[in-house]
Length: 467
Image 1 (cartoon, helix red, strand yellow):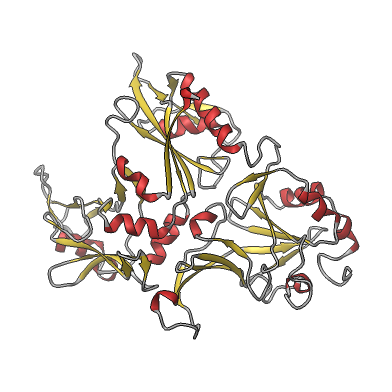
Image 2 (cartoon, rainbow, N blue to C red):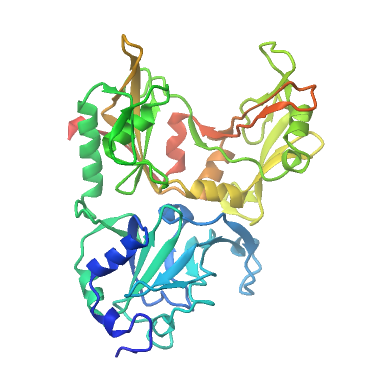
C-alpha cells in the first residue's frame, strides 16, 4: 500500500507518466537518461549493485576515485580490504520537479570481488524514499526502478519509480538500449533495442566505409558540419558522419560504444601507429614535490638533435626495465602480477631511480579515474588520409573493424606488467638555464595496436562487407 507521506508515494507520483518524467528531466538539462530495475538486494543496507567495475559505468560522471582500506573485520587478507570511493553530484527529483540534494552520494568500488555499489544516496537528503529502500520495510520489493538523468555539467538527477505506481508498469513495457549488464538507456528517438545496437553500429560504419573519401570536417553543436583544416581530422570527420555532437560528454559515443579511428598506410591495419590510452599527469614523486623543472633537470637529457638550451624527457619506459635515456625504471607498486590483484589501495605506477627515489608516480586512484572514462565497449576503425590538389585532407574508413568488450582497471595493470602498455612521455624544457624556462608537459601511456586486445576480455575483428 502506498505511503502518502513519501516523496515517490504521492498521488501525483502514483499517476505520473514516463513522458512527464522525461519532460521534467529535459527541463533540468539532462541529455541522457538511464534506468536500472532494482533487485531485492538493492536497498540502503546492502547498497544497490551498479556493476563489476567502474569502467562499466563510464556513462555516469563521477569525481576522482579516493583510495581507502575497508574497515571490515571479516578478513585480514589485504587484497580483501581494498576499496575506492567516487563522489557523485546527485540530487533526487520528485514528480512535480522539486529537487532534493543528496550530498553524500557516491560509488564504492571493491576490485577484489569485483563490484561497484551505490551508497550514501539518502544521507542528509530531504527526499523521503526510505520506505522503499529500507530492507525491513518495502526495500526488497520487486517493481522498483531507478531512473538517472545525466547533464553535461556532470549533475545527475534521480527518480524512484515504486511498484504501486503506473510508471513502474510503463517502464516494464518500454524498449531500452543496453549500455551495460545492469543499466539500460531510454532511447528518446526509439531507434534501438538491446538486440540491435551492435547491428546498428555495424550498419552505420559500413555505410561510412562505402562513402569512400570524405572531406575533413567537424560537427558543430547544431549538428551542421564545417570544413576542418588541421591534420588531426580523422576523429572529427568520423564523429560528423556518426552525427555525434560535441556536448561535454566523453565522445564520440554511438549507442554506448566508444568509437576510435586509427591511422594506417594501407587497409586493414598496415602501418598502424601506437594508440595513446590516457595522458594523466603524475600526482607523486619529485615531479610533484619539487616541481617539473627540477624533475627535468635531474632526469632529462640534452636535446638529441642539438637544439641549444633544451632538455628533453622521453623514451619508452616499460615495467621492470631501466630506460637508458632517463635512467629510470617503471615499477607497479601494490599490484600482484601473478594473481592480477590490487594489494594496496594506495598503490601506484612509479618511475624509480638507482637510489630507489620515486621520480614520478601515478596513484592507482588517479589512473582509475582516467581509465573509468573509457567505455567498456569500444570499436576501432582503420583510417587512410590523403591530400587533395587544393591541399585539403580527405579520409577513408576501412571495412575491417575491431570490437573490444569488457575492460577494467586491473586489465590495464596486467597489460602494463606484461610490457604491453608503456609510458612514453614527450616532456621538454626550453631556455633551460634561464630563471623562467618554458616547459611542455606530455605524459602518456600507450600500447601498440596489436596489443589492444590485452585490454579487453573479448576482442573480435569483424569484416563489415562479408556479412
